[in-house]
Image 1: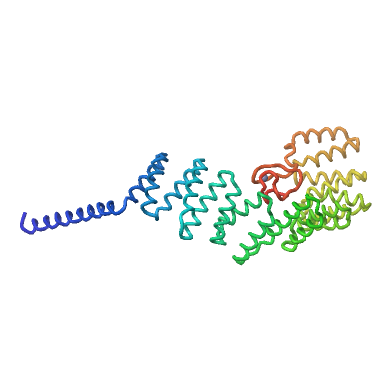
Image 2: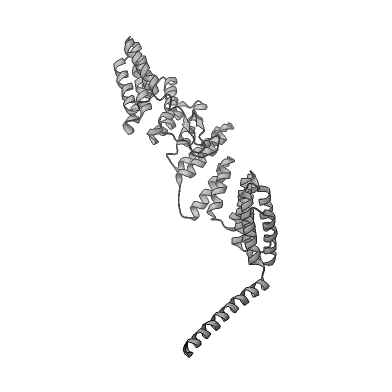
Amino acid sequence: MDLTGYGLTLFWALALGAAAAAILWTQTHKRRTSQAPRLYLEALRAIVDGDDHTAFERLKAVVTEDSNYLDAYLKLGDLLRRRGRHDRAIRVHEELTLRLGLPKPDAIAVQKSLAQDYLAAGKPQEAESALRKILELQKDHQWAIEKMVRLLEEDGRFDDAYDLRRDALKRSGQSDGHLLAMYKALEGLKVNTNGKGHDARLSFKEALNHDAKCLPALLYLGDSYWKEGRHQDAVEWWTQFAESEPRAAHVVFERLRKAYFEMGQFGEITRVYEHTLEADPKNTAALLGLAELSLKKGEFDNALTQFRHVLDIDSDNVAARAGIVRVLVEQKRLRDATNEIDALLETTPFHGGGYICKRCGNRSDEAAWLCPKCKGVETFQLY
Ligand SMILES: [Zn+2]
């Protein structure tokens, strides 16, 4: 090895030594000035190991030494909540609310964790108060708005849900007439059950100002007038319901049938079915209605054709099959009737019948816009 080779080796040895010394000095120095990073790591490790006690001790030490580690406390509380230890999560997060002068984003983060704790613990009032604090700090906090709206819906406070949504929409320059109308309609329905027909109708009409095709508003306006003996008004609103959404017209068919019968206007219901079929040619409820009328009038061949038409659209339609059996019996074609009964027994039995909530699976015989079980808004499919 020549002199140049020795020089290079010496150079590298010195360079590496200096680097090692620098790293060592930095680490020692850090350790001396703040224990927080090490404690925080130990806490996280304890969280992972499920050692809550150690995690708590370390995290307390961390926040005492360095207030920037607020996040550590938040995390621990969130973890406790996820493990179902709601009361401890609440205690951890509540302690953070006592700290004065938190910057706004931190104060919001603390309330957000608290709100989740209370929701998980089944304490909606406390959750609402935490959400309210978030919205005081930041009016357009989308997460808080969504959670708050859900709480208000569950509590049946549709006017409050309406106000919150309307203000949020206004701020973002958007509009959602359908949703705002829905809240007004549900508020009206709530009032209506307390026997205040006039107040209820005001809400329904407010709903229609937002959305002229708001189905519950149209339906319940009709129901409300019907209850007070104003049959002609009732019929007008129910008809508007059927015209606004022909696919859901079956909801008002029975009401209109009864109303026209009581008013002695027997022919009118035919017009309702035909009108519906013009807009929605495959409306099986309207076709069944016409078939029933034919059967009643003794027009058996017409009835048969109409019932068969329903089966072309929906081969499992139990009402149509049963209708065919009735026609055949009337025509004394008993062998054919027996064959139809066999076919009836082979159809997927009674797949229809009622409405199902797509959130909780609850069944309802009545058309509904509010699930009585999970309080979901518009969770039933009408058609
Ligand atoms: Zn439901």
